[in-house]
Image (tube, rainbow, N blue to C red):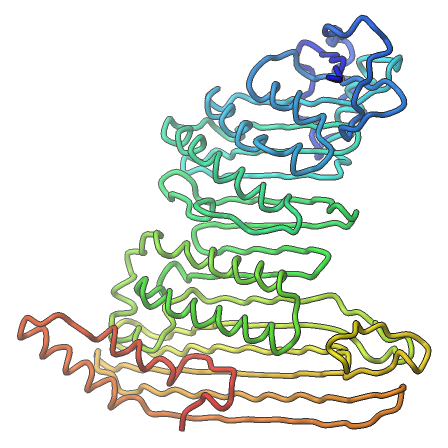
Length: 523
């Protein structure tokens, strides 16, 4: 049986900018009532044919869709099919790309389309329809907005909205018009935008930002990508990505926890070579894995955190360097730096009190990591300091028998477990100073401490309470080491031999970069 959905289309265009979520729904309805008419598309002659409801399932009553525009364009046809799907992922499948492509193909002309679910026999009075179409956008269960700031000064704005009431999309260009190259760039971005949208709507979510975070500065100077989505379990998930020429941030709030990152390139001044940055990113990714395992963190949430960190750092591989990139910091003054943009990043799981007998025992995971760089003076007389820090606080319950699932209750028989509490801290600081372009200082310090307390209970009785800790710190004067390496590099260049300075420095970075494990801080 092939269910057929009756389609009601309203023509001509009567949803204006005031009907978007930021507008006034009632006024929009009033302003459009006089100019609207309703035409009913072809529907089956038999009233007994089943139809799909707004979530795409067969309902007991007949359901039809009122369409805002009477169109057979690719976007509308895709919406006619997508609206019969039951999941958010299926409803948004291909929709973001189609919306961007159509906006580019029409030269940036405004697009507004929606399919509103109504019961068979319901009134289709124009003012009421306009009000409902506006509310569909304003109170959507799932909403995605995407804004691009163009180099020419115009702003591209997109919106996708989904709920049990139907499906809606909007797109427009504000504050000017797009150049031919910007329209081409917009069209080329469609596939990447859809891939990112698909990642967010899948269960569990994934981050697949791709070239979306690598804007061509000659076309686009910034973006804002926000999503509010309902998971299959009914929980809310939010996502926000914002980028401009100097900063970028990402925040994801999911049922399993929160991921948050902020980067500041200081205009690109801090960025080193691609090899240097990739080595620093790899070092951090390994530390993130170690923190997740040590703190018994959620593996999927840490995967999202790692993907966000890696993808936002990949921006620097293609970003043009500022004009002062090589005058403020030269090759020598970059030697002790990570080569990455400064950042703060965190991954946090919601606290749970899983033991009803001891409410003071909290299951938690909170990990923070950051880099801050301070520059003083000019190129010839420069001092710089780069500080890196990390902190892990975590606690969890563990069954005494790895083959038996832990189910804590109010009875003593359920109280066989270990309760772990972990608190780790690490920091590193490097400092360099130059007078008349001569390096006079190069120092590094590393510090790390780890502490874990484990309490063991049997039949609700405390059996052991053990705390283990380790700490180490090291301060180094690196001036002589760096001077020797630079002298060897100058000699090699005079002899026409390929420089090996970067490889040699890379092999020594363990002496000054962040190291969270005390035993690995060498004496």
